[in-house]
Amino acid sequence: MTESSYAFTVPSQLLRLLLDEDQQTIRELEALGTLLGPVETARRRRHQECLARVQQYHEHRAFLDTFQRLTFKPSRLKKNKDLAMVATNLHVQVRTDIPPSPFLSPVSRVCSAPPF
Image 1 (cartoon, rainbow, N blue to C red):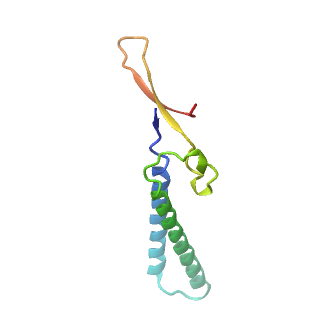
Image 2 (image 1 turned 90 degrees about the vertical axis):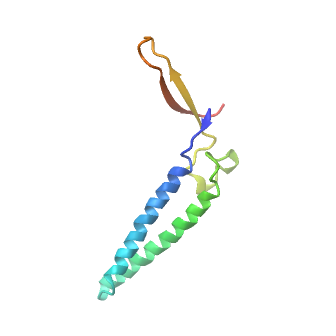
Image 3 (image 1 turned 180 degrees about the horizontal axis):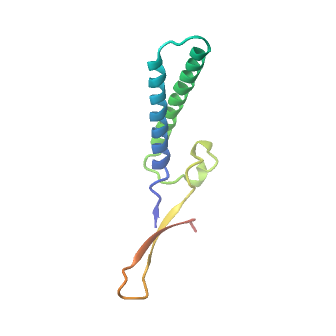
């Protein structure tokens, strides 16, 4: 039995993708330069929203990096809202099915199961 290796890597990769997307939007908004009237107001508002999200993404990635060696969250952290995306005590089991025919090769399946 082993722990899932994706508990923290997938959320971290998602944050990286969202961060890259917002940084690209910021670059595009800055490339527009100064506009006129309400369009400039909308551009500034969108720019500020993206900057705020980028800051939040950096904070969340730094937080996730503190759990770099863990592959699940312990039961004592199950009410932590910042770790809501991580399974509590999730175990992954590998099961090998042996086929009835000697001419077929065994098949391995990964199954997640709660701890006992």
